[in-house]
Length: 291
Length: 119
Image: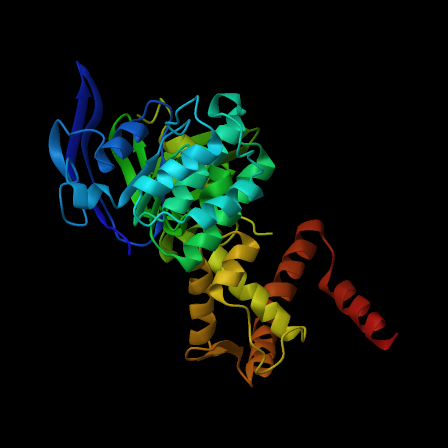
């Protein structure tokens, strides 16, 4: 069971601050999505609207074809874990998990217990006594074990150290393979999670930058390197995100896609075409000067 | 494990082809499932599936419904032929370009190869 998401012309305002500004995109059910954006880009606001924590100012959000806001049949199938986990700080770990198991339909208590061991989270400890990384891990445990048809993890692994993050990635992939569902991860650890993501949604200042298959998005970024004059001639008319010169050599990052005819032309100009990592592409697409 | 040079699914397909060429995988051997692949390499299962799909289209793998994916009986021969056809474009042409850039005469290269061959 997986839920699809449809966002149409969505806007959210806080007073006179526009957090989301006419956002539209669609998520097919059953994939792992990455929501990428800089700090303050509106990621958390967007996710809280998807999870029915907040009502849009304009536009609409449909989850499984229905408005999720104050809609119990949809809300019960959505799990949003926010940074820090929204946990009662004086409760013990085992009670937090027990509570989730009571209120969440489909929550797998035995699986949560296994994950607590994997992440080495002491069951008797109070939430307030956990380290930041352990609190994040507990949030991830609750998110994964919820098995919610729409599971949203908003920067859930912030504060986890590298070994814990890799443990989380492994657990996520393993459980997703056995229980496919729609999963949205928001993150700025792009390089680390890029390969887990089937599709990405990039937002900036409340607007959609682009959405699509991770590999297709990444393939649109190309570095063009060669003699400056030739690079300039080749990139004329293309979207140039960034350029650097070193002596007579120039390297430009363009946002394509480049068709075969262009690639052939690069060869005649003796230009090197190189790949761009998703993280670099993200940086270029959301930098001040591009905005 | 993977680099950013080409799509991950293509790198997976290439890796399996290498395994077949080197005999790590023999004809009719079962290959790991997409989920096992995904877990092992920490990649999205859809990416692994895309690589496998390619190999099926190219006739390197075949599927037994409900059981899994297997190496096609003629895969090693097919891949060897394919590599042979690409050998000059992939290996020899770049070498000639390099030689010309640094001023090594082609005759020297030929002599060098012949010397190596008769050794």
